[in-house]
Image 1: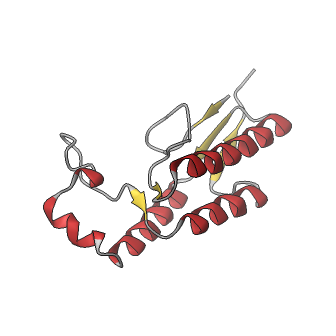
Image 2 (image 1 turned 45 degrees about the horizontal axis):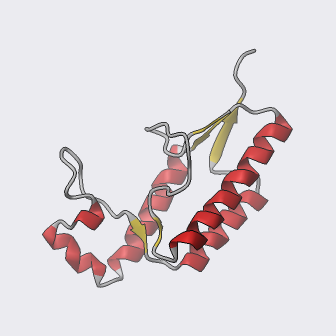
Length: 128
């Protein structure tokens, strides 16, 4: 079973995903683990082997994160290319790595995703 967390990059784990909420880390890890476990349950119960995020879902989340970020004082820090934006990584365009919209909003979105059957993911079966 394979869970891809970014459409362009395959990863083996979805925890600590890009743009996680600015919140208590153990709580965020727990919320991610619950979402991952629910996703794996769906995959197992429906016979799927791979799930990959839809590009539109990634683009929509990135736009939302950027919109929220622009409303904070943190947006002013972007002018100095801080490490918090990945500016210290060679050959990498700095971008917002943290979601400042509130942990509760992020957790609610995870719950809504699971309740709706993970509509932002594409599930596939590998040939046997």
